[in-house]
Each structure stands twice: as C-alpha cells, then as structure tokens.
Image 1: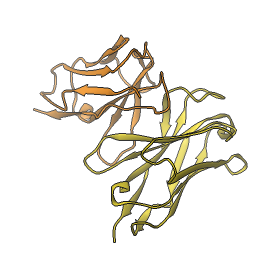
Image 2: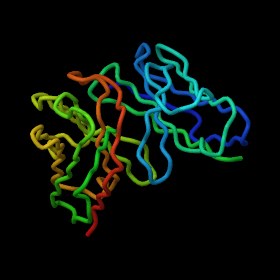
Image 3: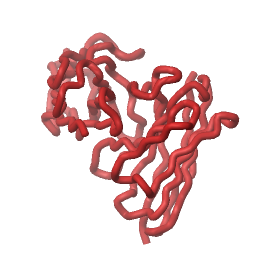
Image 4: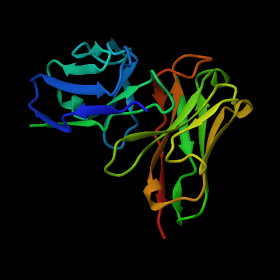
Length: 108
Length: 122
C-alpha cells in the first residue's frame, strides 16, 4: 500500500500571503496525484489532477507541481475563501486509493 | 450538471446494519466507476470501496472488507453501500464519488455527493 504523508498538519497564513503545502508518497506515483479542497460541512472538491492540472472553477493562484514521490500545492496569494482542508490522493497503485491525512489551512 | 445525492444515514446500534444509497444524475452513470469515501470526526478522508462501471469488479479497503458491500443498479442510476457489523469507529460522513474517465476505474474523483452521516452508538 502506498502511504501518502502531508505536511504540515496545520498551516497558519495571512490573507494575501503565499501558502505551500507538501505531499510525499512512499513510492513513486509518477504524476498520478490529485489534490482536493474541503470546507467544513461541504463535500471535497477536486482541485488539481495529474499533479499539476487545475480543475474547472479554480483560479490561477492555485498551482500544483512535482512527480515521483514529492508534490507541492501552492496558493500564491491567499483569499478568505481558500481557508480549508487540503488532501492529496494517489491513484497510481490501487487498491487502496490512499489519501494524505490532510493539511488544514487556517487564517493567521 | 452532475448531481450525486446520498441517503440512508442515521443513528444505528453497534453490530447492526445500514444501507446507504447514492442517486446520480447529469451524466451517463452506467459508464462511470464509482467510489465510497468517508470522513470520520477529527480524521481525514478514507477511501472505502470501488465498483467498476458495469458492476463486475469491486474493491475494498482492508478496514471494511467483509463488512461493507458495494453494489450498483445502472437501470436506476443508483449506487449502494451495505454496512454490516457496524462499530463506533464507523461513525462518519459517507460520500459517493464519481471517477472522471468513462469505462475506467483507476483515475481521480471529479464529482462528489454532499454526504450522509452515519452514527454508530448504543
């Protein structure tokens, strides 16, 4: 089973600043990685797929990068609606389709 | 647009069973593999089960294998999850999610339902 590890668990950032979230896979998953955004009481929402392709509806301030075992989600200038929990997920080797434990992005 | 609506959650005693449903619309359900994922209080997302588009292939997380059963009815655009031998640690919001690529299982999830809450408590 591929283990996905996200860091940090909680990230405190001020609006307008840059946020960098990390995700590491226990073995290579090439670019078969997705990021999801989840706000309290809402369903997860696909944000990034293929490690770097932004899903419909998300602005350009969101970007994903990486391949193999190391991945990054960057939000260039945080807006109030970006504060949420972010999960990475691998779909390279399954089952299971493993998620990271999540990074909570909170307002500083 | 794509809609996935879960139902069937509620409060259930440990050891009992429950069946969750997910009704789909806005896409060709019979072409899409489907998943169940849950979010327990204070925890992260946990993948539970996958069913192929035609229903022939099913896969489960170790944590629910032998207790949960995924199924689908393509004639009614419906996905199901039968939960048996429920434990307090199964308390969670349960989501159905759609695979992005038709006729394929191994891809990311591009649409999710709003979830249904299952509470296992005596």
